[in-house]
Image (cartoon, rainbow, N blue to C red; front, side, top):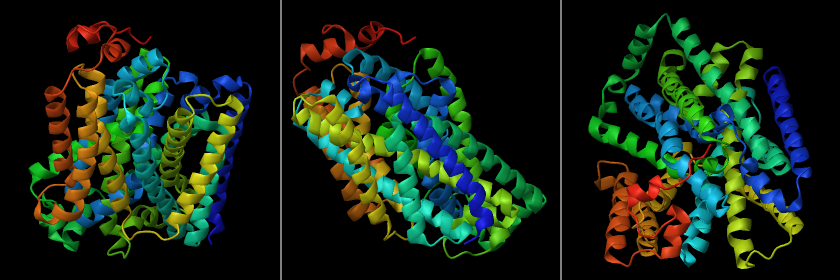
Length: 502
């Protein structure tokens, strides 16, 4: 193991753990009855910078720094089209969903996505099935993050894979269990800054040491001329399909529960608007900038056996040892900021959305506190155990989780917040039909189709959402009153009646 690399990284991890201790002290100062709101949404007190970077960092996962740069390395510069389209998802997500989630969440005292969906679409599916879906898909997603972290340690510092997986899981679970959402948000702020600065610095170093962009493009073309073609030499289909896939993937990210939950947490509209700008700039560095580095790996590394390791290997190749140790925190920041957010969502689904509801809310606050923290320990252990037998390509796990959740949740959430005519049968059909369609297209029909499975599954989900809602009865009056204040208004009038979050 390379201790020169590991020492600065260990200092970084110590800082992260101290943030967890700070969050624990904040929670200790709250009443037991206030635990859930503080633990899961930080008492709804995030400012603009923290909101922007916790939103962006929670989406900037291992896929952003390992899996997708690997795809840029494998298929070329055309992969950057997807990054360019995705970089706007922060502003769209916060503007389209964040404000509405904040308004409704405060009104009905919700702090999890299933609580919003159940209030909008009363019934067993939203009450129990959605939390189970979130738990399954996001557990898979967390496995991909732990796999990524272990591979980073293995590639850069020579840490055995199994030891790295244990370290990633233990450290992230520790500070999240201690400090909850507040600790996760503060660490996300720090980690987001690391991710943005590290990405830009790496690319500046790449271009400078290569002597400009020209030599990089020449090296990539020499490795494979298809890597500089618009469609990756046919690997990505037409440019239209590539663009539409990137746009759909960017939109799909909006429905990821660990991102959407940020809508519950900001303190006012000023913080939201600031976050939309800052978050977009950060997202560009987490996508286009770092993915360019992945494609440029051909210039410095030639052919490598494991494309997932292109960014760690570049950092080790280009940075001095001490600086490489500091850069080691960059992909780790992406990984831990995602795992802490997802872990909170999964545990809130298990405890708050399943167990507490099964008890009709009659759970002692202190028992609730113990259950939330214990569930994190159990889920974290399960994730590490699953990560000990990793898949060959990390991105396959990420896309499976993102695609599955988006197909189930995007349109029920979006239409539930903006279309008063959306009803429970439509949402159930959209959720279950979209999920089944994604699995079908991904596993059976994908080889016969020219677009990503999510393109087709979202189309199925959209048609079912609108068609079934229009074909069945209108929502109950009480539901419309809870979300829009009146039961006899159209979408524009209903939305205009909502209070502004200030």
